[in-house]
Length: 278
Length: 286
Image: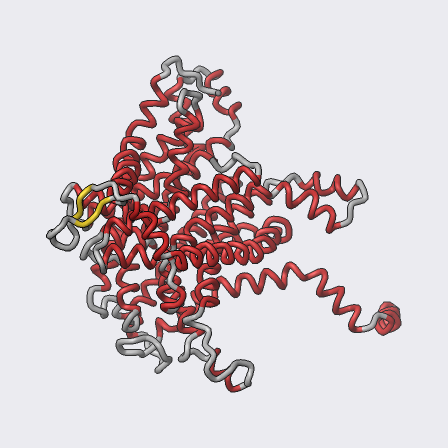
């Protein structure tokens, strides 16, 4: 009987109307597919061309090989550059997370004279174009006869990461329920205990997120690094320099691995969060 | 304030290390940059040697010589910001309201391309859209594109590259502010007989303004100073102010002009940002 009704109703709605209704309902979904395709086309391209049997310049598809993945350090200098990027990224993350978290607690938790100008000082580096940050810092290093290189680059990265850490951690602090801390105090925890056992664990996800952000900003930075690193190679610098004569496929291998590694870290973080919530 | 420490010193102690660092490596360099910008070459000195003569004419010359690049930087950055907003708003809206249990996964996917170096992705675009890619020859064979027309090495490619690279910076703040909207306000609007479009225009958009402001700033500021997209995807005709500053520093060793240009760029951006924040009426970002 039901099939009879269906047979009777379907032809009454013309295809055009049905299509436009379907389209209207799914417009956002279609849009989302386009949006994500746009975001991922170059990532997919980079991944695909990491399997290219390309020789020196990875421009045209020449054949499938696993060779690049078996020998990611095959291109000269590439792993030294990657190593520098990781070292700089870790150091910059540690220092900027510590400094930024302290500032975030001061601004997020206390009323004090100079609070709004503190906010301004945090905002300014974010409102300054990278090229100005890089160029001005290089000029300072030159005045003090400091040669650009590893440590100047670390300093430069800490400088531009601090603001992002402050903003991220501050947002987390602002979203805390103050009653939780009051409850701890009511239960005779002193200020230090309350901070260590209640406040800090609650803010920790924000700090972890800020650290991840700082690392990815530092690892991917090119402009500021280019000004302050002198002859030292980092991974983005390697790619930029190599781009003139064609980047080796090993760069695609490293880029793709970073992508999957970061994805794995974020997914693992989500899983841990999900488990705790349960 | 949930913790009220009697000591007034605590916030200052917390601030001190970070601010000492920012003062030394952000404020001092800017002051030093201001000094450099009014220097002139030492008569009979080597290249790269300059003395302070308070030559404010450096600013006038630097600006007049590079008017075109300044104009182009602000035009490209504005276009990229508008396009990024147009692409990111529906995306953020869909993730915030229509994605159900996939919300977190989709959010991760917005940030995920970030982790493949942005240079690699920009070069990937160059190769996809370039002469050797499959797109351009196909379009030419179908006669949808002239035989001489190219996509790369044009201003279109530069703006498209900037739009692409700064898209996550636009999407995340938009998502954050859309996600915070109480669904009851949207229901209330419907109860008061507003249709979907009116609700969107009069309720959703105004409530998402902090995200719009933050996103447009996070896109516009780096875009205006960018020179990587113009170098990889553009041609000598698409040079931006960042390209000029970079070459003044590294190729011509003309520090005063580079400093004057940097300062002009920074001042222009700060003025625009201040006006924009005033106009948009939100202080949340600062």
